[in-house]
Length: 125
Image (cartoon, rainbow, N blue to C red; front, side, top):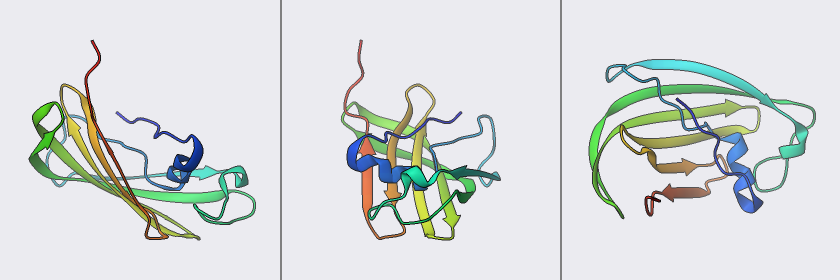
């Protein structure tokens, strides 16, 4: 299961980061690779400058399980560590996945050193 990160306004910098992604029903330590190329359209001073297409090589690993406190209470989550390597640098993602609510916390670190955290705030319904 994967989701596309938000990419409006400043958040378009997330295009050069690993997408939130988990392979369900896998054990801790399970690791996989993926890749994607993105257009020069996403190139900018905040997310990196390149010409043509940029190849992102992803590595994902389910590193454990952790109870985390969120605005909707304590949630048991699988933790996925991910990297995106390219000619402009390396970005990382620590993703927390809950079986009921999906990705509830995303901790990005861009190759520029910028950190972006996205957290579940409420459940609609």
